[in-house]
Amino acid sequence: MHPILIDLGPIVIRWYGVMIAAAVVVGWRLAEKEAGRKGLDPRHIERFLLLALPASLAGARLYYVGFDDLSRFRTDPLSLLAIQEGGLAVHGAILGGLITAVVFSRLRGIPFLRLADTLTPSLILGQAVGRVGCFLNGDAFGRPTSLPWGVVFSSESPAGTQYGSTPLHPTQLYEMALCGLVFAFLWKRRRHGKEDGWLFFRYMILYSGLRLFVEQFRADRLILLDHLPAAQVIGVIGIGLGVIGLIVLRAGRGSTRPDPLR
Image (cartoon, rainbow, N blue to C red; front, side, top):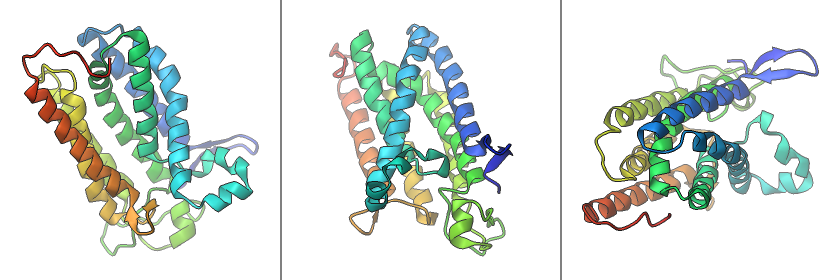
């Protein structure tokens, strides 16, 4: 796999950036269609994205830096901006987007959970597309494997730099496929739930569960407290919050309680 799509000297276009852009466009259009079905103004989606994109990018970078070697960034602060080299964490991006959604929904008078349900299919589909970018870039890679589908990454990629010609688990593709299945499930069942939050809380449970699974094969992962994979800790928390959210929805079914984050 080669991380660079076009190299014209001073102008370098990387596959990672192209796939992230594709994920944004696909998610944007999908969310606009869902907004109409959910009774929201589709123009809110464009306004939200203008705020959420920089917030998610900042969250993805800061989350990564927070778990990486901080001494490097203290000695070279400008390396914080070198996102073309990798170093973006999806959990940080989700957190940045979530905070933006809470603030945006309050400012616009939109029920937060309704907005979250509207964005959920776009989010998980965008994550699937984004993992293709990770695969082509050679980051978020897996451990060495002797399985026939092991992948040797370009020497210019993070995976190739660390492991050379050793075949690795294509964990990016594992996650891409699982995210695609979660998207298909949620998309098919998105009309079933009547309560706002029905889709969002299921996304939390399913995505957190698949990350717990994929993380077993990951070599490129962020570590918490010297030995715990951060993604697995966040995954357990995500499953717990999703389950609690569904329990609260069911307990309040038929009540007239307002959206708690409105």
